Length: 180
Image (spheres, rainbow, N blue to C red):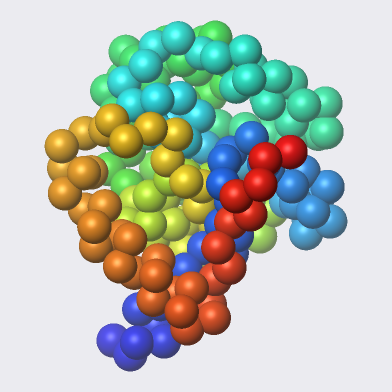
């Protein structure tokens, strides 16, 4: 594999400070109408069951804008489904990202094509890699919290290295750290 291919597989189309900074109008202009969301440290803190008012408001805005959404998480079924019920969204748990199967299931659930669908998550090696392997529009967000699964913590240093290289080589811009 060439470096160009390596970077392409791990480079998101967009890198944001937070999932709550999604550029809704820009996504609509791109023809995106389906959104696949990671759960842990993207929408909620890792292993949290309580859905924040901010997360609820996000999905109201997205629905009002005409987007279809689905949760795709590597986490266990009971937690993912509990959150999905509160948000009134379809969900796929134990997804085994970056494998493509769960992303394909999400496309079928949403009724959207690859070109009409974006993946939003906080990890390069699961969300971005999985989405890019399938040809979806990928959006990386900074993790909500430093608390996370042990295995994820182990991978974060490699992820920081790769992100640094992507930014250094001009493939990716750092997110704007100024809040709205």
